[in-house]
Image (cartoon, rainbow, N blue to C red; front, side, top):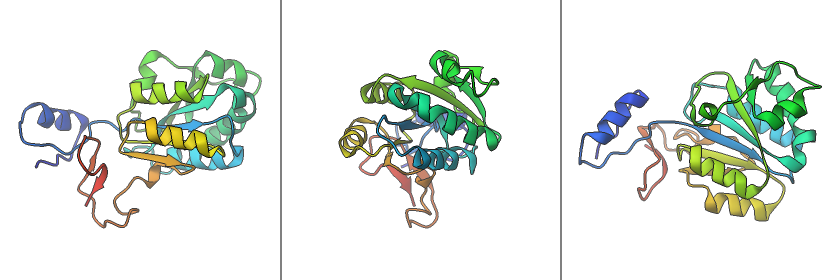
Length: 203
């Protein structure tokens, strides 16, 4: 078993050039999905913690997905809180339209933003039509590291946690919790995003 530690390029090189089982991840493209049934203040606290505390960590969120039914109420609150912490926001067309009257310095998101690990105080935002659309986005662009849903609807949370393909999937919890030390494992030697029996941190 090889557990590579290092840059994205190094991990990908090791994975591509050995037949020995490799435990590793090459990207940390993590998401927070804000569902239509949500405590907005709780979602705000989760989003800020998941992005701001240590933005270069592999478990920091790079994309925020917001259900269209709550977007008008939630986006201004979330965006103001994130910008107050120095986060540069990049939004899709609907995000920019909603925030136009509140915040004027939202950059347009491009297709490349959905698959970019910024490792910085930059966050892409997309409004989605449904829970299913959020899951499809995550399974298309995510790195199978850690993703979270903010919702007060247990059925929505259960669906999200069953269908998102990631080593760690959380309900009303920051993605920053995905850490060997926080899990009580002590020193962490790797994060498994592979189809191994144990997904997540390896101690």
